[in-house]
Image (cartoon, rainbow, N blue to C red; front, side, top):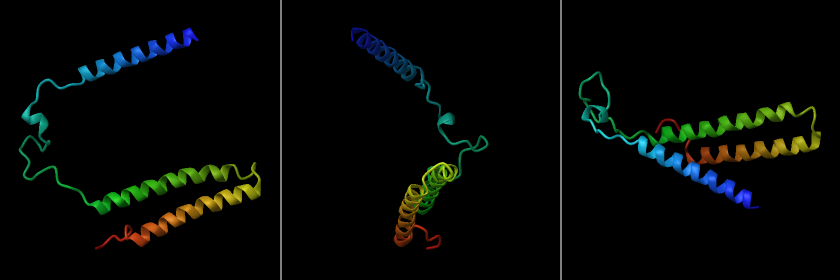
Length: 117
């Protein structure tokens, strides 16, 4: 038991030292106007580079990521079809797809899928 406590304290000490060193070494010491401004062929930018983006674009991107992950979760279900019980596989697949369809209906009902407004 004493060995486990000793090893855990050594691991915590080493990780703390590494995090402190990374924090100290990553700080920028010189703040330069050219390096902190956006790069535009060496000239000052004509307009602000910190313009807000469309919230609708962000929602579409999040919905795309959700359905992209869905595809990654559905592909293994096809692979395990021959080695699994058909009843359990069907119930789990239908349950999973129903959750996704309810989510899609909710997004559609809230108007997140309307491109033009």
